[in-house]
View (spheres, rainbow, N blue to C red):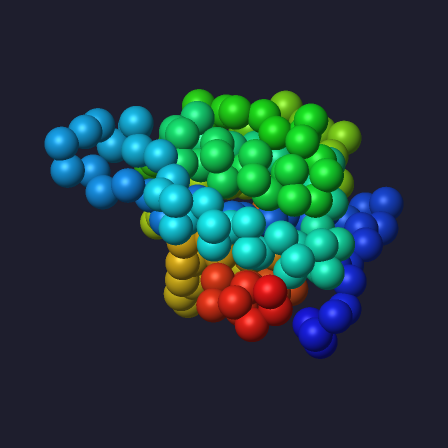
Length: 174
């Protein structure tokens, strides 16, 4: 997508799924993985991404997030940055180890949503993007976002990667 271009607008039959990996988190040493929070650096980096998110006009109808603190914090930072604070929904099906089947069941709970963001973990997100699009490999770095478009119901192999933002782009935009 050209710089400054707005995010695609769904038609009546299209669905747009966004996949966002959580930001930089605390090291797991000495604590439970499920309790890890974003580091100050991780929070700052995500706040620095806000301009890019607004430029892309990212406006998901719902933001589904893993219940793990680092993912929930990421989802809330995103939602606050684009003024969608009331659209964050924690879903245990997005905890680490989630597969596309789990994500699809979470998506089904929001059947009217045409734009949905999943905030979660690796390798879950890149695996889902690869499966949905047929891509051989997808790499989701911390804080990165992928956009997958469907012209109809999201099904395995029918999505198109509209774009994938590496978090290094945020530093260029900010």
